[in-house]
Image 1 (cartoon, protein in one colour):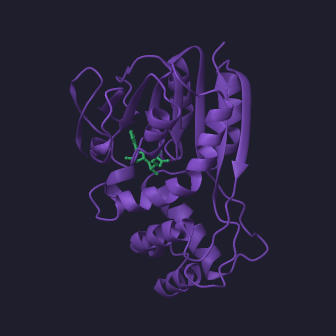
Image 2: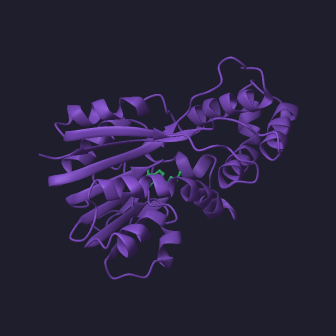
Amino acid sequence: MGEMIDAGGTRVRSGGGYGESLFEPEHPREAERIDAAALVFDPFTTRRLRALGVGPGLRCLEVGAGTGTIVRWLLETAGVEEVVALDRDTEALALVDDRRLRVLTADIADERLHPGTFDLMHARFVLMHLPDRRRLVSRLAGWLNPGGLLVLGDAVELPDVLDTSSPYRRTMDAMWQALRSTIGTDISAVPAYPRFLREEGLRNVGAEAFCPPLVPGGPLALFWSETLSRMRPALEATGRVDADVVEQALTYLSSPRLAELGPGMAMAWGQRE
Ligand SMILES: C[S@@+](CC[C@H](N)C(=O)[O-])C[C@H]1O[C@@H](n2cnc3c(N)ncnc32)[C@H](O)[C@@H]1O
C-alpha cells in the first residue's frame, strides 16, 4: 500500500492491486512496457477522439494517464484547454512541461476523490484492472459537464478456441487467470461498456474494437513478451502452465512463425445530455 495526495491535498492510503503485486511502477522496464502498448493503440484512440470532436476549448480528465502519450496528444495535437492527468503513479508525467497540464497523483477508486467536472474523460486499460468498475463508470459519468464525453478503452480478446493446447494459448489463458487472481483484472465486462454508458443516461453511445496483428519484433509482441516474462511465477502458480510451456510461448512470440489475432482494444463512448 502506498500514500497519495488526493484532489483536496489530503494524504490518503492507496489501494493495493495494479502496481504493487505484478507491475511495480519502479520496475526499470515498466514505462517501456506501457509505452509499447500505447504506441500500437494511440492511433486508434486518437482517431476516435478526433472523430468525436475533441479539440480546443475542452477541459479533460485522463484517468490512469500512464506515460502520458494521450495527455501529450490532447495538449499538443488536439489543442485542448486543460488536461488533468490522474494516475496512482505520476512520475513519468513530470516530463510533460505544459502550463495547461495538472498532474493528480490519486487512486481513481478512492470515493473521496472529486477532481471537478469535465468535457472529456478518457480511461484506457485502467478500468479492466479495477474492482467495482461498474461503480467507477457511474462516478466518472457523474463528473461530465453537459455535452461532455466519456470514452473508455479496455482489452478484448478473440482467442483461437479451436486450438486451446498451444503454448501461446495456454500461457495467455494462464495470464488472464493470474491477472484476475492477483490484480483483479477482468476483461469480461468490456463488451458491456456501451450498456453501462446507456444506463448512465448518456446519449450518442457508440463502440468499436481493434485487434492489431501480433507481428514478430513488433511493439505488441514485445509488450506481451515483457508482460509474460515478468509474470512467470504468477503464471506457474495458476497450475495451467509450467516453466517449459511459458518458455515455448515466449520463443513463439519472438519467432517468424508468430501469427495470432492477439488481444486488442474495445472503445465505448457516450455523451452527457
Ligand atoms: C496499463 S496502464 C495504461 C496507461 C495508459 N492509460 C495507456 O493506455 O497507455 C494502467 C495505468 O493505470 C494506472 N492505475 C492503475 N490503477 C489505478 C488506480 N486505482 N488509480 C489511478 N491510476 C491507476 C497505472 O499506474 C498505470 O499508469
